Amino acid sequence: DGGITQSPKYLFRKEGQNVTLSCEQNLNHDAMYWYRQDPGQGLRLIYYSQIVNDFQKGDIAEGYSVSREKKESFPLTVTSAQKNPTAFYLCASSIRARETGELFFGEGSRLTVL
Amino acid sequence: AQKITQTQPGMFVQEKEAVTLDCTYDTSDPSYGLFWYKQPSSGEMIFLIYQGSYDQQNATEGRYSLNFQKARKSANLVISASQLGDSAMYFCAMRESSGAGSYQLTFGKGTKLSVIP
Image (cartoon, rainbow over all chains, first blue to last red; front, side):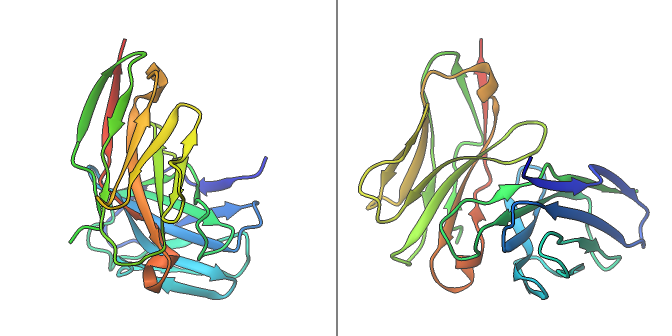
């Protein structure tokens, strides 16, 4: 089945630790995205990538880093510089970045900082 | 200014009735796209319906229709014959065709719909 796989589904982290969230897609999509969702809020864009080895900052990139070494993979690292990292993180992909086609989402990763 | 406004934090609807979820948007771009997504309690985002700014007719997908009023900049989602499984968060989103907005969807804060048996 084609889709987007995020792991882990739940993650706990101590303050000061970096953590990496995995996102893998087998849809052969060029563009991939990371969104953050806080309670009562919509989704906010962290980073996006249109092609391999290229990515751009979204609205709230501070304290996060990404890589795009393979078309299928777009991992997100939440660094210790992120002041309030507890949130629900959603990865998405689309065929092209600048088309009107919809985004396909993974099931999300819930990060809790203890 | 918010680009997507959803003014109803929560809505209730009786099973089998129709319900309208409001969405207004703000853009100066003549070409844009509007989306509605459903988010059940499990968390995944499910695409429901899409409306392009140049589409002459309102989009429909099964029980979902989009009431697109371009002059009023509104893109309300209508769900007909509500079912218990429709209980979820619903998000309106927009993609603009130029500038940084062309690479992302901008989301509203969502409306929580509860279907009552």
